[in-house]
Image 1 (cartoon, protein in one colour):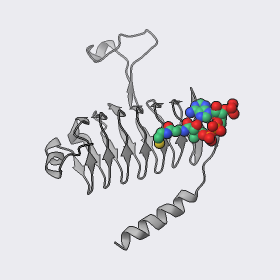
Image 2 (tube, rainbow, N blue to C red):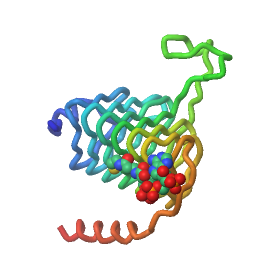
Image 3 (cartoon, protein in one colour):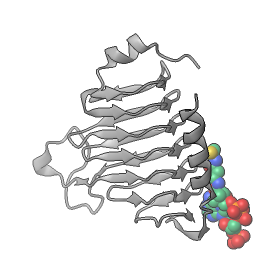
Image 4 (cartoon, helix red, strand yellow):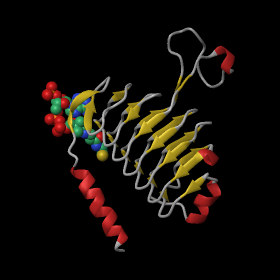
Length: 190
Ligand SMILES: CC(C)(COP(=O)(O)OP(=O)(O)OC[C@H]1O[C@@H](n2cnc3c(N)ncnc32)[C@H](O)[C@@H]1OP(=O)(O)O)[C@@H](O)C(=O)NCCC(=O)NCCS
């Protein structure tokens, strides 16, 4: 994978970005002035990050794997150490499917009823490949989402969910918090 140089990343026009950011030259960004990236963020081939008025904030040590997309008018926040695997779609906007209105972006707002709600992906969350996260959802700290899941509702911290729609499958260990402490300590010694 070819990563952009620091100079090329600057040219994209992000609101801000941290140190050690790796962005594939095949990733696309829309509304970059409303996108902030923390330190040690990696964004792989064919990702699309499209920020509306609410903006998109990505924390530190976040991986967004190939073919994933973060799209919508409301805020999308991705916490530190989050891991978004490939082909994940995170939406903070979605059309009205009831038939009450017309849908799609070529139609003016007066004829539509788009659902815009913020999405939060907490610290240490992991989202399995091919999953879809709908507007208004909060994945609380370290929740884990199985592959090919449809997440419509909030997910509890340190809980594993999977399926369509996603249902609770079990608990996730808190040992990762100890690993985080050790990792931070090891970085402070560098
Ligand atoms: C969710 C997951 C972590 C569960 O793994 P596990 O604890 O080993 O679970 P098991 O394989 O024992 O499955 C337990 C049950 O959940 C079901 N299940 C597992 N994963 C599922 C999924 N993604 N969606 C729906 N059901 C799922 C199994 O069919 C099984 O059902 P049963 O008890 O009726 O037979 C794993 O299946 C998964 O989806 N991992 C994501 C991997 C991924 O996307 N990696 C990308 C790179 S990071």
